[in-house]
Picture (cartoon, rainbow, N blue to C red):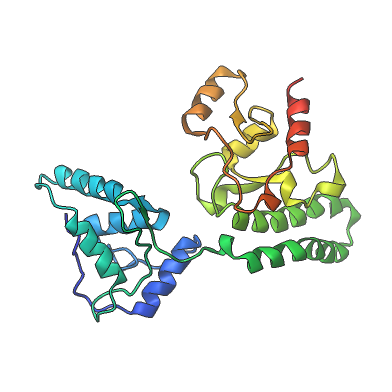
Length: 273
């Protein structure tokens, strides 16, 4: 396993930090040919990827051993993982100068230590306060009444989705899909049923396309304790969804933005008939 692959190349520390922050915020960066954004390939690139989401030393070590077995190479000690992490954190000319959590224990989680935008309270606050203002400002510019209903919903959905992406850290609340392009603002109480709560973050959940459709059609129910229930209809879809749907909803860090139980109950009541 080539943990030290390309380690001697001098690094632009500011660019490495900038690109790492962008990746953590699910923004694109240019890789270095066949290398990742830090100039690493092979096993080093795998370790970097695991550090983006957080991993224990044991998980990193087990992944290293798996890669080595696939290459027909003998075992390595955990020191090679520690060396790679030190290299990522290092301040020397040929190292990266990145912040990484150092839990000091094999049970602790190691990860790149840069807060994502979703944890930026100021950013979330601004998005929330501007949600209705932006929505009404754009609606005021619409003159064609026959298009107003459609555009009204699109404007509101886009603004609400932007906020939910921050709150749910660019990830479906029911599975591990983190491709921003397929994530949607899924209303609990439908847009058409209650105009007073259309723009409430607590009346929406960030879901991937499949979970959004299944939730909208009542094929997925979220209980008051945020556990996820898959009714026995139809059996085939239930079996497929069950393979990658979480047992519980993954919630925003702040309880202020958790889905309201009264809205979840309304959704449940309508779809349990």
